[in-house]
Image (cartoon, rainbow, N blue to C red):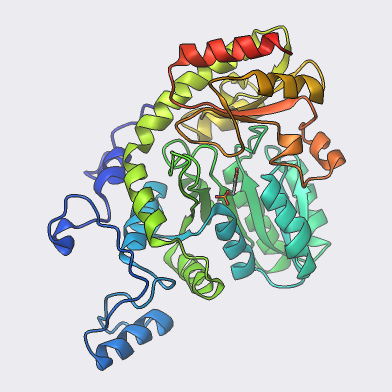
Length: 419
Ligand SMILES: Cc1ncc(COP(=O)(O)O)c(C=O)c1O
């Protein structure tokens, strides 16, 4: 993950990740942020309480600072939001109780019945089920596009979406879970402009940045209005917390904070504390995991029992996806899928034979996790829709961790014997 040194004196992301957003002098000089586990905060006076509420709910610029109640905000949340916004290059960020809570906040915060979501395919199974189920039930339609690299194809999908209603949101998950399919973020922004000219309302562009995260991809700099990340994954990094974050312009994030307060989906104090700690080592963890992933992906590609591997690092540079990958990403990440030459039974035999890698959903932890998407993460997605985007019964998803690569390779090779 080589990064050019910024021309300005702005700190590098690695520096931001360690200390940004925390002032020890505000916490008795504690070198590390304390965990503020209080659910409510004492007002200095009744008049201060009133001013604080005026500032929080009406945006009154009356100089009031402080916290009211944990669901509205708390000191640990201030730290992780400042850090995430700085890493993503956003004016502000809002953190939620999970990635799904963040996605729900965006959908319900910015859309109304009759609106349409134009989204990439595939997307995370939970997001797919949310759009097709609860969100559709509220009269918000969604329509998917398979080719997020080609302007003419995407323009045709946009016309189709506009025929269904007012397009309020373009949602791009890139790279996609679990196939690592790439969407051109700048193209989404340009299509949003075209839709805006045609229907008189420009849809917001939101990108799910979970697979690469802020060290390898910055959607806001590429024209997205909102960058959503499941912080449960690489940012949390130890499979011991749930969190979601959204970065963007102050006004948009203000709206998300307002809906979050009412939905009750604010990130809790303990998880915020864990997350602030985890941000500090994120760049080290993802660099080692990415190194390991490159080796494991090559091992799989060369194995006779494996039919295909979707590792981003294998994208031919002269292909449309390769061109966007080079322009848009600073690394290939460490989560990808591969397809066995076989069926569900073969996939299950491999999973059950593993000794080091753990059979579990989720990704981005220090440990290597592997799962069978068709029967787990994408269980709720109907078979035909799954198979259309390349998730069949022999597909496995792997999130490579930071263990010694020789142990991972040996484990995988002995499990492949069982297939
Ligand atoms: C790409 C992607 N987006 C969103 C989510 C949802 O995040 P969370 O599990 O934190 O709610 C996931 C979870 O696996 C995911 O993989």
